[in-house]
Length: 298
Image (cartoon, rainbow, N blue to C red; front, side, top):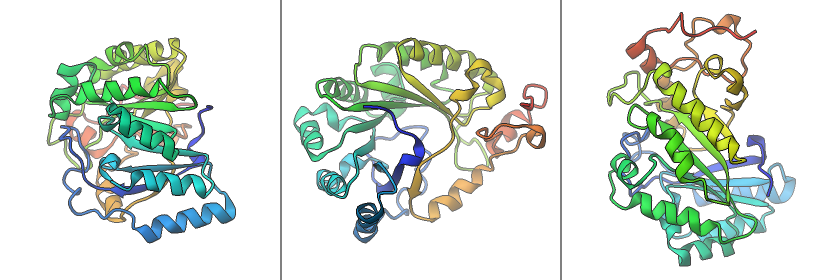
């Protein structure tokens, strides 16, 4: 299957529970207070799709969507409403169970966006703080290879604990045949300060990120980078894609998200980039404005 663009999807946050304890979790402070989308809101989106067909795909997400017992039913209803693609965003552990994965496949889930924070059991499980998380997620990705017309996408968050792992993540997933795209998201803490000391300096992460991009593309995989200065990516600048699908989520999330304070680049007024988010407040508080490092694009 071809990879679609962000505008082809609508994303619904249907679950706010998770059974991992990732050190970089950006919503851990609000997970217990945010409300998932209701049955009425889900049904409304399905009706819009039936009547108008504004999207090709739907993304079912949350803290961990596979904790929803009704997930297969939601997928079946989405496909019946006219969505060609049904994507779930998950840590991937539950699809390590082939019986459960087969149920999702039969329900119509044909895209799997899987978070992979580390490159092996030691590094991955240290970040998720749950033993066995790598083994189960990797088994899930391997299980996807057994199906036709299924797309896997991985997402790895770039923190001080993980940036040096990026090339190895690519290498250790190299054999997967369903893996069509790899995404690398530079960490943001959803607050004004980097209280966990997880934000790396761009110059520290850059060589590992560039190497990971090159290795992923040598395997024929598409790459997207989020929240990294475009001017630092050089020939890989067009891999920066900060666009996101239409997202239905508890409005309280945006109040927290705005605390990031993106777009704080001293060159913003002179820069032509349409994708760069500049610096956020937490990064500036730790490393300053990076005036000499960054440059405006023409």
